Length: 555
Ligand code: ATP
Ligand code: MG
Image (cartoon, rainbow, N blue to C red; front, side, top):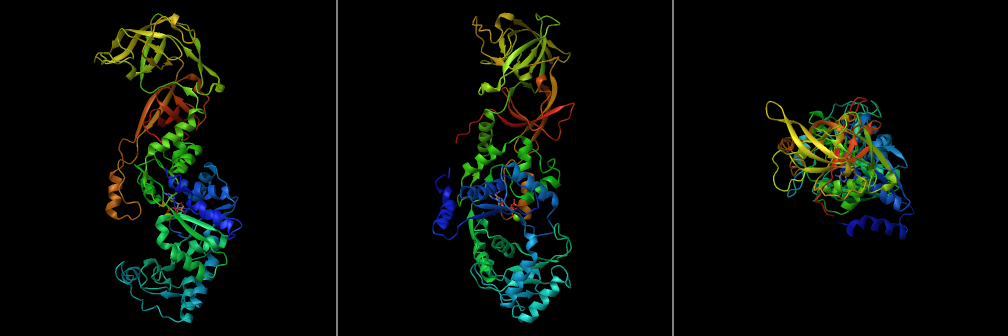
């Protein structure tokens, strides 16, 4: 897709190394621990870690934990797990909150230089004074406080003398700048809240746009890669680094964020789906979170390849989710054992097969990867087939089972439908067939041909299993990724698909008895499935549909 332009960041880094601007590069992945990572974050991870790896540089995992109200240790733990699972190893593990003292000192430096002031305006007033794109802002009446007064007030803010929102510290830049971000942005606010890392040590917290450039500079990050919504913040980023007199000067570079159709991709919305119980937790297999994708059965390889294919560019179109499906099929094709599972069972009795006989049939584990060997499947007089593989009155071109027709049972024999057994309501409850011993699979029988091949499991030996079949969680995503208002929020919940999960009870081959959670299989004719880690019990296997086999998707 964007393969050619995909290297604009790479080109910048290359040049910086060639010109000697940097001898080594350092990138960082800076999540805020206020939710679980989603596949959009995977893009940032692949770019940051991937580029650093390519140039023998370093990548820090940094928790951008400057907002105590939303952050939690649970999120910190899940983020670490997810980054590792995706296949990356950070050089240093950092917390922005470890730099609070240094950030405070830099803010004091700004005050001393006359570049920051304590403001008593309320949040609403600040917004009002800020002006608009067409109108310049208005200076706060507190803008010209003396340095001494500002130092004193800021110190008292830190000491907890004021309530939430009573005062803020603002950078003194330019109230008439065409870039609204430069109209004296708030850089510190008061929040009497316990922080997951620093406890009650602080009651003032730096704002993102002040904290982030300092964090980067403190760590010696050379290339600070972020998404394009921060483009307008770049002048402020550079201002902070310069005016705070940071030794190391990081460069912010923006790339387009990943969006996927039928997928909401903001932690805030995902959290809402969790909190309001639309899903069964952050790791629900329908969620675009890394933990959800993992539980669904997607592999790190598939996610990485998908993200790479979406490319690195300034644009941010929406990607077709079928593209991710394509990469997981590619990855599992050679890895996943083949097996047979019946999702909606219909009993078939093979009337001419001896009552007590059980034979073991040989089947390849993966015809596309013969090294995986063979497995043994029991076959006897009673089997289950899919309900949809039988029709009493079939339309033309239906080649599966119907009265008088013969089909091939995969890995076994030809069977012919002789009789249909119904209950008092006329529902088909059982099919009676005969088999032809001559037609055994693998014996090279060429006597006659049949058009249909269906799968089955032996009724006596099959294991009960639950299958969870998924559809997209979001029917049609609203066009409000960045700036949400209440109305948009409503539309988004309206779009939750009520049929996104279907739970059905069926059977699998008996040799599945020793499978482990997270094992992945290709069920013949159905698709790829993952053994669910949350619902599987010693009594019952639960399989999540990862993807079906068919796709019209073309790269
Ligand atoms: P969200 O809006 O989902 O909460 P965020 O950007 O606020 O995401 P952070 O924890 O701040 O989440 O993100 C960490 C890094 O991941 C940032 O550098 C951010 O730009 C990047 N990132 C987040 N979402 C995407 C996305 N959809 N595509 C690419 N990068 C993303
Ligand atoms: Mg955020």
